[in-house]
Image (tube, rainbow, N blue to C red; front, side, top):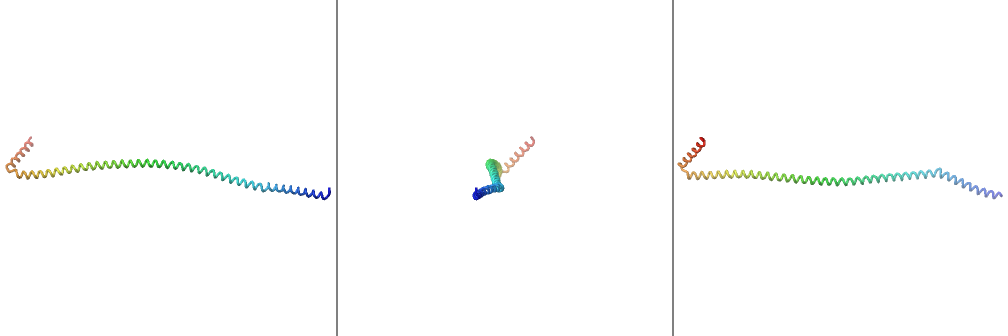
Length: 167
């Protein structure tokens, strides 16, 4: 082997060894610093994804809870509306019954007042009629009764009173 060939082989092997050392250094740097950074970034990204999924699941759960609460509120609102309608019907019927009873009492009171008014009017009419009849009788008696008839009537009246008093 000649020196030229030796140097050519040495140059070749030198390049092979330097390439191997470079690849080994590159692998060392890759595994020593780059892979941990990439793995940390990937782990951080995975944690962020897991956190986002956890939050999404929490929000889904909260959304489902809110939907159930809304359905419950709608159900409660329907029940309240039904109770309010029932209560309104009851109150309306109670007011109608109360107004009917008050109207009937007022009608009965008016009837009694009318009867009292009629009785008072009858009494007044009777008194007026009696006074007129008495006035007419006095006028007629004054025209038709003389002293002798008057004396006989007074004696009869006194006699009947004495008989009634004695028995």
